[in-house]
Amino acid sequence: KEAEIALKGLFAAIPYYIHVSKEAYYETIFYLISGFLGQPLEVEKATGEGRIDIVLKMPGTGTFVIEMKYEKMPSVKGKAAKGKKGKVGTDDLPASVEETEPKLTDEQEAELKPKIEAILNKAAEVALKQIQNKEYTAPFTKSDQPIYQAVVVVCGRTNVRVIFRETHLPTSA
Image (spheres, rainbow, N blue to C red):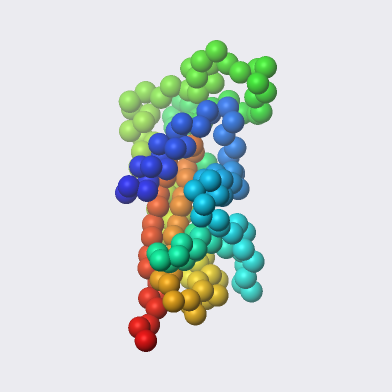
């Protein structure tokens, strides 16, 4: 839960007009943050079965095999639950958020919440199955560090689901 709260706060602080509705956008954010923190990671690491979105090796902690998923926001009655379509150049920036991001009523927000939860849960399930079915952790099992499967799902700009599973504990000598 702490990771979800931290990521939601981070994503919410990014101005809406530079948001890109793509998985690679979030991978890039992880890549940059990790690099600034001195924890280099590999993005789109090729394996015999596919590409791992992110591999983060943290000495003394373990290897994290991370699958990212981005899902679009569902719509609600009367409005799409997203901002204006198209690119916004810096000369075209609106005076306020209200000009491009629709305000939802309490009823619309209540309708949207279970839809978002269902989307987050389904995408997380798909991502975990992808890690398992494509055996993304296999290249790291000879390590003396634990291996974790991690899933990060984003729906819209700030709805986040994070799941961690330890999948391999090194054997003691």
